[in-house]
Amino acid sequence: MHSLAEEIQSFSRTRLKKQCTRVTSLSGRRIIETWKGSTITVVDDPAPQERTLGYVPDTSWDVQIGIVKPYLLLGSQDAAHDFGTLRKHKVSHILNVAFGVENVFPDLFIYKTVSIQDHPDTDLLPYIQDCCDFIKQVHKEKGVVLVHCNAGVSRAPAVVMGYLMSCDGHSFDSALSLVQSVRPSSSPNPGFLEQLRNYKTTTTMNGSTKH
Image (tube, rainbow, N blue to C red):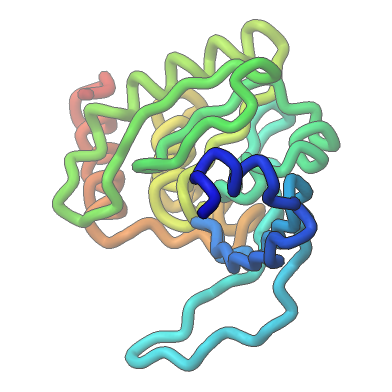
């Protein structure tokens, strides 16, 4: 009878079975990881999405960048995680206003994370000043900042609108129009829009921005 140690020593890597794992990222990208011994191969998963009830997930890879100002860009987490896109647009700083999205290139870019929940009841305005200060500093340093959340639809556009209204003299309608023109998918949730609309009203009436 062989001992466990003898069985381990006599075991050959060639007897290992190939293992495949399907992985879906937060952005919806699907890949297949195949392990054989100590070798791993990663390829995109060509299989169609399984049927789901109630909704159809958007699994497309979204690296579209909205150029709001030469130094101010708007996009999704996909763009923030795609080094080629960041390099193409000469990004130096990244403002991450998502919730639970990691900063994947901490040694290559200067990050600021302001975790905001995408919910109509979330108080957006307290975050605006912090984000504006970061964007203004990037502009002063002649850098380029990408503002992103998860999908680049609600939180990031709302923050950029707040910057345009607070620091660039735009009205609510003008800020919304500019953001949607450079990134058509922009659609801040109703609560954020109402806060920004009232934010500008308060600024106009009092002659100073209230944070």
